Length: 203
Image 1 (cartoon, helix red, strand yellow):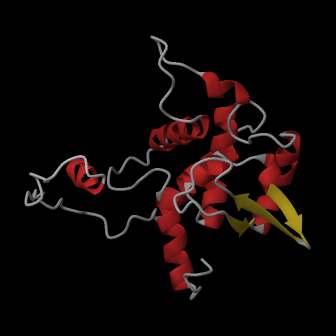
Image 2 (cartoon, one colour):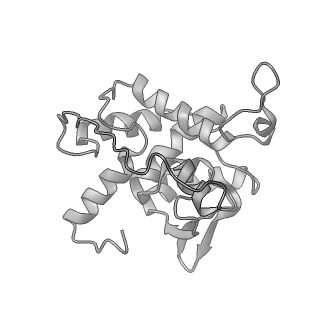
């Protein structure tokens, strides 16, 4: 890849690795899907309901991020970087705007997702209001955290929140290494949407 880039930039005359191919054996896969089973989903969502969204940033993420991911199919990192100012109302419906200005978006394009009425009934809007327009799942002070030796943290605060959330899910007993403790919500949402006949453009 480096030499191909170098040729494109006319820094080298030849790519000595152009014909090199690496064969990697396929792994055995025991699960039929990357989605959570109903039992796994219940374990996480029930535990989330027991978390206190006023106690700590980690508790806030554990309380709300799994439920939001379950209802939207959004990537966990897109939700942990969500700001209160990204949540708004249009008509009778509330939405979350996932935008690159908040952090990393895989497609680099903003999109808007509706918030399920159950999230509203659970009190999510009150949680958002208490954030006063700021980040929902990490503090501003975490942006400047540095590792010993002075090197800046490699992960953003939102990415750190997502990683801690994954560790929490594993601690609940959802330990199958073939599924992601966070990203499996996206696969779960897609699978349910497909069974419900929802067009992929909308899901």
